[in-house]
Image 1 (cartoon, rainbow, N blue to C red):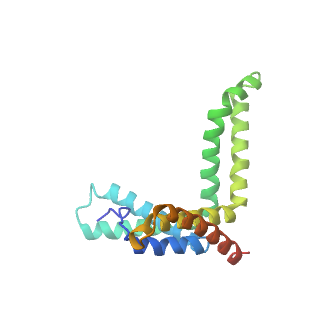
Image 2 (tube, rainbow, N blue to C red):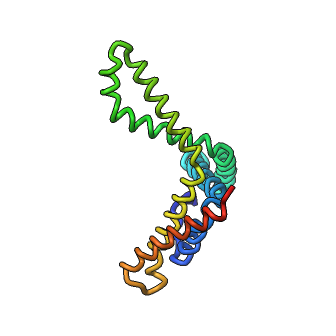
Image 3 (cartoon, rainbow, N blue to C red):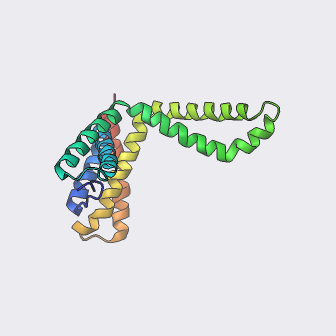
Length: 185
């Protein structure tokens, strides 16, 4: 009952979702964010509550309520979530590649200076990601939609595999153009 993430899509459903993401991914992003956060809250609630709740109906109601709370929070904190995620990942990358060199350069200032430089660099990259959120979402949703169509097209239409890749690339480009044209603001 709590295995919400193990949804199996039929090829037709996948093609429909792929087309929606391909041509309208930016417009439906908030819905997708809400759904992703809802599923996170639902599954976390289920994993925690299943050990001490035996009533399946009560468990389902609590899972849904927690899912709705998480969905609302994720929807509200979209830009903050992106900033934190990108900043954190950037910090991890910067620290793994540049920490040793920075420690040598700033040997007299100590580790605090290196940490401050890494955090500042990470926050700058996080800010850039938030500033370019729209084009990034359009590109990623177009790519995801084209890929979802590519993965499921063979099950619906009899086309040689090499042509499916070309069709997916063309769909990716067309999807990006459509989304950029329809989302000018």
